[in-house]
Image (cartoon, rainbow, N blue to C red; front, side, top):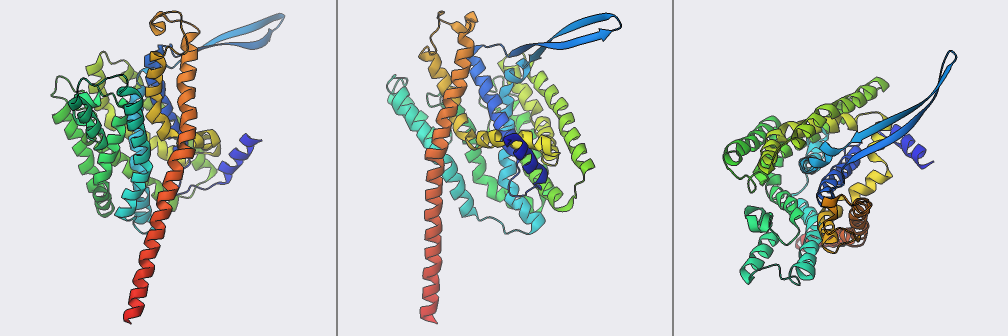
Length: 432
């Protein structure tokens, strides 16, 4: 009943320029794949699913046969290169950030204010980010005496509080404060320049896109590639400028299509086929990335594929957003919506919790290194716990911490803004 009603809702729902429904599923799947990669690093559970399928009885004249077919689904390339989905996460961020500006370009909607933009980004990111930093610091890093001296402690803490921890190896790769927070540092650094880039894009979209794309490509070519060790360079904010640019361009294209393009049954089918066909070149990049030999090759190949991967993902988003009801339902059903809603909390906590479970030897194992021993059923139990515990925590934090704080702060800001307007009107009336 729920599935049928959800499918009918997708069938009757027109594309919306305020909420791109398929992005819920695409974002949830991207973060799930990144989490799978991090959890696989701890469990070493081989991501191959084998299925024995009874095909039924076949009749050939007087001969009657029963068929039994074994299917094998190998997710190894996807999991082994799961980190590449961070690029997709940042692409979606660029898409959604620019969507109001795209509505201004196509529909004439008023441009969002810079102050409102920074306030919404702050209430979205800062409480959850600070919570992670201080919980890890006071409940784990300090009790375990992970810092050799006070200088190391303050360097790690202050760089995280200023979102500059990606600039130093000790606070980026070797941090004691939850290593996945580097992604939020990139996001916040991009937020600082986004209002300028967005307004430039509104005025001269193709020129701004070309400059951003060229800047990202040039930075990877001339600032990343020459280094023998690219650890600190491959994921700096400028290396993602072309990814963000592609996301902004896709947002503009999406709103333009919604406003100008009239769908028929045939166009829906064509868009669905296009989305499915785009999975093939995306999969080829994933397979090539998974075949990289060594950490340095992994980083270099990721930098080399970054533009093409993000461009293909943009086309996939546009095709999916205009596809048929069934495809859109698969990417926008209730499970996907909840997954997208809790995605930030899940991303923040999943790797840290997986590592702690290994430290605590939970679930219990017979071998000292059960992942290396391939111990079963420990690998399955650990994987389920490493997914399940962060999911429960992310549900609690999203609906019991993140959203209540955001609602309270935004409501206070609106009341304050309304009060300022009212006081201004009173002063005008008094002087009249």
